[in-house]
Amino acid sequence: MAISCPSFAVPIADSLSRWEGISSDLSARRSNPPPGESVSMSLDDAKPHVVDASPYEVFVRSARAEPCMQDLVKKNYLDESVYEASARYARSSEFSRAVSLLQPYVGRDFRVLDLGAGRGLTSLALAEQGVRVTAVEYDDSEVIGAGALARLERGPEARLEALRADGLQLPFKDGTFDAAFCRSVLHHLGDLPSGLREVLRVLKPGGLFLACGEHIRSPFGGGRRFLSAHPAVAYGVDERAYPTLTYRRLLRRAGFHGIRLFGYPLEFDDFRAVIRENPIRARLTSMPLFGGALARVLHAAHVVVRRYVLVPEASLPAISLVASKPRLERGLA
Image (tube, rainbow, N blue to C red):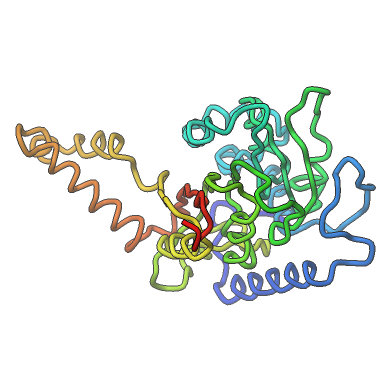
């Protein structure tokens, strides 16, 4: 299937029907895996097998082949070489923020779960920082899934372990990990509340959960503009977006606390640099006594509007979330 450039809009009815179809198929595979397919397996022990390409794999292959899609490929770290893509991701501001949050969990005795690791983009970057990573991926694709993850070069001192497993049924004991990380994964889960509860279960008390690059949408309109704008939807990829408050609410219900958001819209320093491009706003926010306070108020309004109300879905905005597992179980605190 070839990508039509530069427009990727598809009929909403077709997008929604593909969305529902893919979700139903994935749910059915989880509930009734094909004969001989276990819920989890060691990638080192897995036998090669032939599978039909997933919609996402078809999309990635097509994007790589289209000259007009190269910016998208680079922006989403879909390069042919996962090592080059991971090295570039390791230089990004997103990863820098992630490393600063995960720094307390770096050490010989600490374990970090990389949920929905794909072909190992983030796992490689984390391992290079000295993090002991367990990478989990359910899609068995040889291009963007567990098949590719199994081929990563890992020396005898490698800090990366790879497993094929369902994110809704993780094959780990309670309290296994000190921290959990995922990138652009939560909005793909067929059952987000169950997925969040499963992450909470495998975290140790006080453990950190960091989710980067999660799509958001306006609480109005059901995400139709988001679906129309996302180029992968035309390929049947199971893309979703949630209102920001939905992520917050589901994290709280799962049992997380200390929930914080970052990554979208502009952080304060970047926002202030933008408003200074307008002479009037620059003068007002530079005035003695109340200029700084005014800048803070304008930024707060900007965050509320762009993150919670008038979300510009056509630009496919995404936020990052960080939360913690309580140190004591509820009822014992």
